[in-house]
Image 1: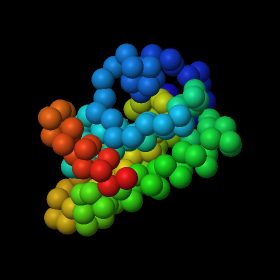
Image 2: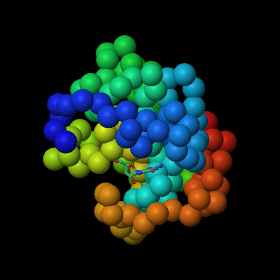
Image 3: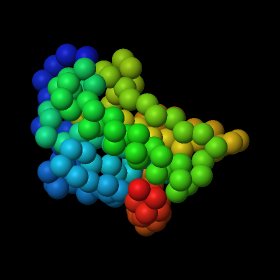
Image 4: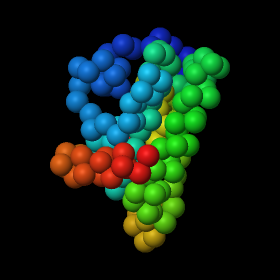
Length: 144
Ligand code: 5GP
C-alpha cells in the first residue's frame, strides 16, 4: 500500500483498539494504546498507536494529535529503558509498504537493543510466548 489510500477499518490494530482482537497491553488512556508486539524483533518490543484517529501513517495524523502521541512515545521509551535496562533503544515508524509498513494504522515501534544480540528481521520474527509478553508488559507498566 502506498502512502495515499483509504483507511481500512479491519486492520489488526483497529480490531485491537475496538477490543475485537487480543493484545498484551502496557498502557491505555483516551489518546493512545501501547501494547507488546506479537512478533517481537527483540525482547520488550513495544508498539504505541493513537486512538480516535483513522490515520494509516504519520502523514495522516491530524496536527492536534501529534503532541499527545509523541509525548506518550517518549514516556513509554523511558519506561522501557527503566524496566528492561537495554544497551540501546530503537524508536522507529514506517510509512507505506515500500518503507516497510505492514499494518496500516499508524504506530511507533519502541525496540530495546541488547549488546551482541542481533535484531530479528522486521516482519520475520517468531510469534512470542504470551505469558512471557505479559511478564514484560507488567515490568514496563510498573516503570511508568
Ligand atoms: P509495521 O511493519 O507496520 O511497521 O509494523 C507492524 C508490527 O505489528 C510488526 O512489528 C508486527 O510484528 C506487529 N504485529 C502484526 N500483527 C500483530 C498482532 O496481531 N498483534 C500484535 N500485538 N502485533 C502484531
